[in-house]
Image 1 (cartoon, rainbow, N blue to C red):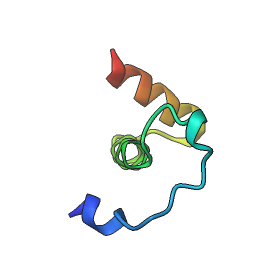
Image 2 (image 1 turned 90 degrees about the horizontal axis):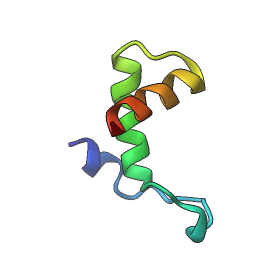
Image 3 (image 1 turned 135 degrees about the vertical axis):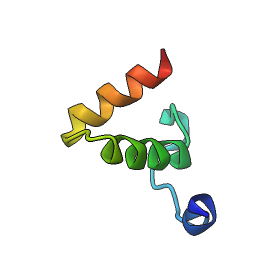
Image 4 (image 1 turned 180 degrees about the horizontal axis):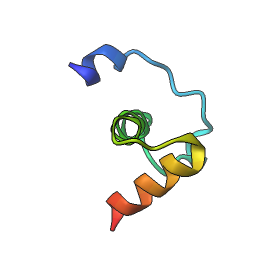
Length: 52
């Protein structure tokens, strides 16, 4: 459902500079915020923890 809702969202980033898909970033952000992450550093820390 989440993916379908945001499927038509355009990614404004430069193609060669993309490290992660926009959908991955959106899902990570929702998961981080619902887990209590606050601010950009909280999101980054959450993402780094999940990569490990």
